[in-house]
Length: 482
Image (cartoon, rainbow, N blue to C red; front, side, top):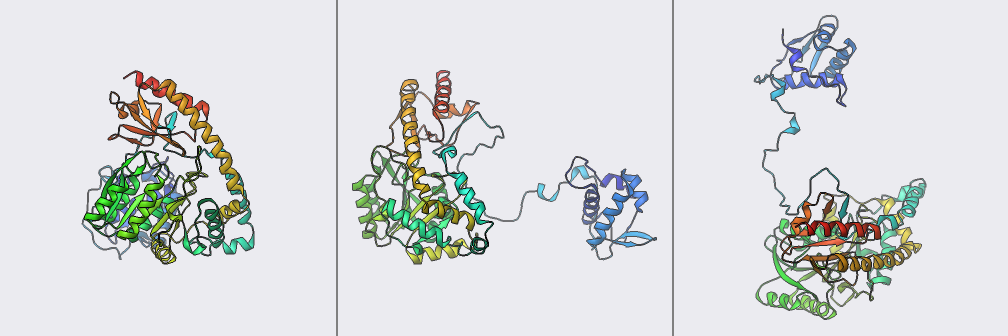
C-alpha cells in the first residue's frame, strides 16, 4: 500500500483548511510523479484512518480534487488518479526534503534592480525614529479629508465620476491645484498641464523615463537624493555629479560640463536641497534657466519642500520663470498632509504630460478618484491653506527648539547650519565621531545617514518638544560613550 500517511502532512495550526491540505498533498504527489495516472486511492473511510481525520474531511478533499480533474470518482467502486495526467518521473517522496513552489528562487533570466539605499530589515521597532523630514500627522487635517472621502462614496453623482479621468488626475483636483499653484508659486498653468501621481517619486520616474535614454547624461548634485539617482541609473543614464555648497547646486560647474559634453537634463532640488537642506540662490536660479535654453537641456525641478519657510518668503520656483517649457516641475502632498498619502503632481507642457499619461497607463491605470476629489475640496474650502499656516508656526518653533537643544547638548560633537525652512536639519559629525556609531544605539533608528559625508538628516517637524529633547539626550548619551 502506498504510504499516504507520509506524503499527506497536516498542520492544524495552518490557516489552510485541513481538507485542502490533504488535496494539495495529493496534487504534489501527482505532479512529482509519485502517483501515476490511473492509480487507485484508498476509500474515504480507509484514508481517514490513515491520516487521522474525520471521514467527511477526506470526502471534501476528494470532491475538491475531482472538481479540479485531478482524480476520478466512480461511486461505490473506486477513486483513482485521472487518466489525463501525463506520466512523470518519480521524485523523492519525503516531504521534509522538498520545498513549496514559492520557497524556490526564480532561476529564469530576469532584470535585477540595483538598490543601493540602506534599509533596516529588523522587525524590532526602536523607541525613537529620526525621519528625514516628515510632517506631523497629528496636526494634519486628515479627519476632514477622510470625512469628505466617505461622503463621496455614498453619493451617486460622486460615485459615477470618481473613476473618470484618473489616468491624468480628476479634473476637479487639477482645476483646484492649478489655482493653488498660481496663488502660492506663481505658476501660470491650466489643468491640462498637470498630472496627478502616486507621490513625487512616480513623477521623477515618468519624467526620467521620457527624457533619458541609455547613456544619456544627467547632472545631479553631490550629495543628492539617492532614490532619484537610482532611478536615473536604472534607466541607463550617466550621472554627472556637481558640487552642492551653501548656495545650492554649483551652476558655474554645470556650465563647464555643458561646454564639453551634451547634457540631457539637470535634476535640481531648489528649496532645502536633499540631503543638505541648502537653498539655491536667486543668481544661480536665473543662470540655470539661461543655461537650459542655451544648451537645450531639460530641468527636473523637484520642489518637494516648498511650503515651509520660516525666516523669509520662499523664492519662486524655476518653473515660474521664462523657460519656454523646459522645466518639469514636481511637487507632493505627502510633505504637507501625511507621508502615507501617496499623492504628488507634475507640471509640464501638455504634450509632455500626455506622454507621461500614456507611460503611466502601462503600469498604473490611475489614482483614487474619491481621494483626489476630497483633496480638491480641501483646497477649494481653504482648509489646506489654513493647515499650512498653522503647521508653519508649529514647525518654526520646533526648528528653533531643536537648535537650542543641539547647541546646549551636542555642540562638542556636531556641526550644522540651521536651514531657513523645511522639516529637517543636516547634521555633520566632527571627524572624531563616526555617524555609523549612532546606528548601534538600540533605542534609536535614523532613517537617512550618509557615511561619506559623516552626516545624517534630523527630521524635527514630526516630533513635539518632549520627543525632540528625549532624542537629543539619547544621541548625547550615545556619543559620550564613544
